Length: 245
Ligand SMILES: [Zn+2]
Image 1 (cartoon, rainbow, N blue to C red):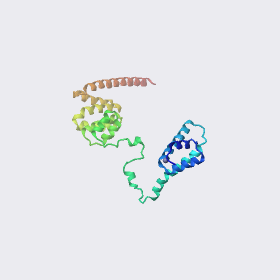
Image 2 (image 1 turned 90 degrees about the vertical axis):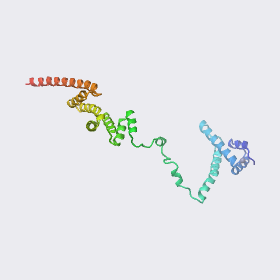
Image 3 (image 1 turned 90 degrees about the horizontal axis):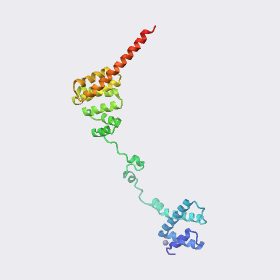
Image 4 (image 1 turned 45 degrees about the vertical axis):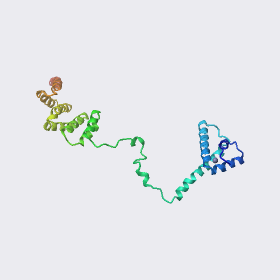
């Protein structure tokens, strides 16, 4: 028998007699072209059956048999190659081409962690990621710039104790950042419920006619107002206490 696509179609549709069927299968066993064609037809037939959920046709079992024997025929050369190849597979070549071939895609697409740099830290700072910016700045050399922004990040992350230490150090050692550090130091005193020391820091900013003078005046007024209200409330409480028997 020569290659005949019509016969293959008839085979998958179970339209051949038993004898014709055997002839076609014998040809398919020896002809790789027809074997491939038949494989595609069987696969398509299977797909069609699954999609339509139709009742299995009369040819179904016979087709499955053909598919199974085709699969065995196609696998045999591959298996033989594996069993009888004189050189073992080169396992080393499996691992080196792709460093993490089995990682999920989203993990593989992540950038490797970049070494901390002032630029990266400032980028994180400008993006508002003060936690990550602080982690970066903490690993950088303690230059005045790095120190100041580390202090600001810690302050914004409400790590007031450490921020206060850094700003105190800056006030003593770095004229360029001293006024800004005083401003933040005052704000930390306030958050630590220490309004009098906050007022002292703000007073220095006002007296020195610094760029923070106006903000310092406004904040000072609010603090003094708060202290007056607090002391008048305290006086009321004291009066009530003294009236008690
Ligand atoms: Zn053929």
